[in-house]
Image (cartoon, rainbow, N blue to C red):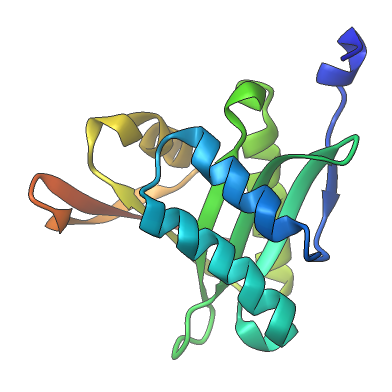
Length: 167
């Protein structure tokens, strides 16, 4: 890859394409963070979006470079709430981490959520040590820890819920 292309900003797209199922599955697998069940869920959300469109409640933002998926975010309104959104997924390919792609994805996704009426965004993650960098990322992006649920995912694996109020 040419030296300057690793420093160029990625192209962002919202349109979901059939090939995104395989690309998202490969990306979440490559991170090494997610269980097989979680990997399947990531792909299922793409599939549901393809079938139902906006009615699915799942919206995507893909970061690409030369038709390669570098990272993506999936988000949507929380059913039953007036202006709260969930950030379901934000993931960056391991070889692309450290380039600021995750932060740019987050900023762009937050803008898209705000356009759709979001005033509060919720994101949750595991309390396992493996997810320390994820928790630090949310805090660096202006999220604060709102709740901690002990043993939520498994014994010794709690759920940490973050929230960010949009202005």
